[in-house]
Image 1 (cartoon, rainbow, N blue to C red):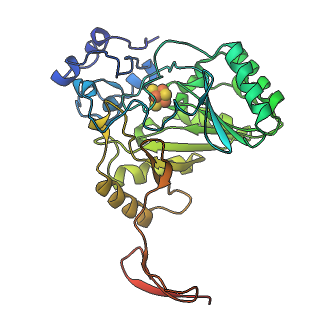
Image 2: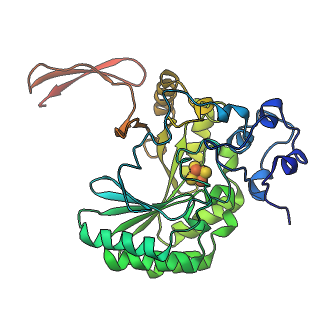
Length: 350
Ligand code: SF4
């Protein structure tokens, strides 16, 4: 069986490494090198610009920090409640189940935490978070995230979920994982059966496909296991330079996701995280791609283009306005641009 890749030497045996790749040094602002055998097998070894390679093979550009970047642009640290719980929005929390991932994305936005080898949350961390939930009934949703929470064993996950359900039986849980992309065979019937036991409130699967070539037969099977068990699947794509920053690639990705019962949910503008400048797409270009996608995709296939604003400003949708003229009062005519660039008048109230 092929092995996961954890060193440049190993990587050099399957890819001819470029100068930028060879000059990468693991540093405080980077995440470790780890590529699953499954994902390595999807990389075209003859293409140094392969969009899958770009997502997982580090380069020296990662070692560059800009003044406008920050380790924690989403202000998760000041909103932390204990070791692993983040309470930034009133009605939802994020629980960092582990900092470990089966494969590290070079664009990872939580690199201040990811891959520090702290390991899974302890039982004390879990029980502390559960007690916080019990005292905060305004929290309706929890993102179980990390790192990748599915690096935990089924028994560890079972304990964690049971603790949260006991504290807050109607808590909706989002399982945020890139396993369907990185190592889809992790998702088996036993994992799904364990989740189904905790059925006092729904689970949602949140995953991250960034390129159509990541959708394989194995990943479709993994997603089907969740969906067939009544766990809806949603996808959060990160807009990445030279990976998916064009309408053709994203159109194919979104249509293929939808066909395989994964709702394209968000298209994220790259966060202002230290060491990720090489991946960020200029906002003007992102907006042009969004407008083109809106013409090509159905409402169901269209993700919401969003930015998580720096200094903890929160998530906001990004899209050009279609409103050209608004009436000065509550009644009157609105001049609205169509997707094709024509205009129509909407009269309010009709
Ligand atoms: S799977 Fe998520 S947490 Fe892990 S490296 Fe990728 S983006 Fe970061």
